[in-house]
Amino acid sequence: MSLQKTSLHEAHLSLNAKMAPFAGFDMPLQYSSVKEEVIAVRENAGVFDVSHMGEFFVTGPEAIKFVDFLITNDFQNAELKKAVYSPLCREDGTVIDDLIAYKLSTEKVLICVNASNIKKDWDWINSKLGKFNCTLTNMSDDYSLLALQGPRSEALLKELKFNLPVDFPYYSIAELPHSGESIIVARTGYTGEDGFEIFSGHGFAKKLWSDLLSKDVKPCGLASRDVLRVEVCYPLYGHEINDNVTPLDSGLAWTVKLSKENFIGKTVLNENKPKYQLVKLSLERGIPREGYDVLNENGDKIGSVTSGTMSVVTGKGVALALVEKDKAPKDKKYFINIRNTKYEALYHAKAFVNGGHK
Amino acid sequence: MAHNIPADLKYTKDHEWAKIEGDVAIIGITDFAQSALGDIVFVELPEVGKTLSHHQTFGVVESIKSVSDLYSPLSGTVLESNNDLVNAPELCNVEPYGNAWMIKVKLNNQSELNSLLSASDYQNFLSSL
Image (cartoon, rainbow over all chains, first blue to last red; front, side):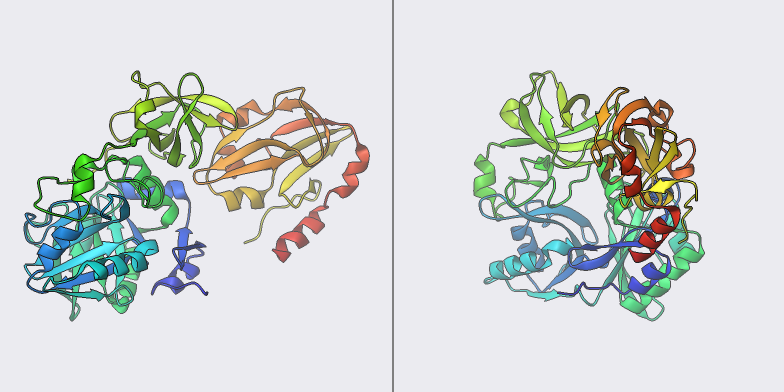
């Protein structure tokens, strides 16, 4: 099967981006240097083409009620124009995907899902629709999605005549008229920095991409996006969360609202004793990579690295790892096996890097 | 993109270079390799005295997002490892043929030199990729 292309594919090639297949799309991994791209987002602004991601709309009188039933986090009580991050779970509590649900109005919800899970999510959500009085639409092919991230993002959008709401905090959303079309701007992202995700038609996205580049915004690829999210310890589907773990296994207990009246997976999650625990580890020397063994002091394997990279900001190797909860050492002495050498890791209670989002 | 390929060095298809000085080879990675890897942030090299056979892994070089093995282009004994490079891996990106040399090896099989590529052979190989 040939790879799908986003509306910005030509633009990526003309910038000599290093391209690679990702979730069935030919996507840019990096343009200049991963290090420079990370620094641009932390200190200035960078733009990512994330058009491969999926967009579903749920519309109708029971749209909010249905989404609240689908996801583990509380959507019902979120204010209008707010975004909610949540796992999407099966009845047995395992994670189908993680997503952001945006409450556009009392009868319209936008759900943004991972590209690799579009079909799986679509089939699942449809199968659960039942008697809910609402309609599902998959708009993934109709929308481009640009993520403008970094402290300069708000000023840039204002320069580009985006009429942002006066009160527009992190994790909110607005539908705006711009250049004769209606676009959706969310103050969300995957970097820990302030920033915006702009859902629009393909033509609008191409114009916005070139406008941003002409204002010295750095084009950034999936490689720097991954480093940025690991630095702030955001989970990634297929790594920290997957079909075999529950949100309680992977540090996402805060997204499971057992006080909600009902949602898919509630019964199991209510009684669930997590098997795993997500830990944040860094190394003074060496770089942990996905799949490396996590060891206790005796050298016994107690878990695995689920994401690992060199942190650009701290200059240290950093890892997210799932360890067996009953084997997690009380004294937090963790080790990582790199090419048969045992490296002592530093345990972090908090993220490696504090993002600048408000 | 044009890559620097000094004429006086020998090369491998794994993108290592070797500078032959009598029965000693100085070994590193090529300009193409460093450019393909991107920002190099970690280098692991063998201890002095280690015996390497032809094409044996002698260390690793890591960029922010990737890990690559280093293969010895020749067999011999490690005379020196570049500790300055271990402490400043980014030198690989800056001067791959200069201060980013990796190891010096005392050769034990001169006939292996025939298996290495000349600068023009390596250039042709890169063009074919």
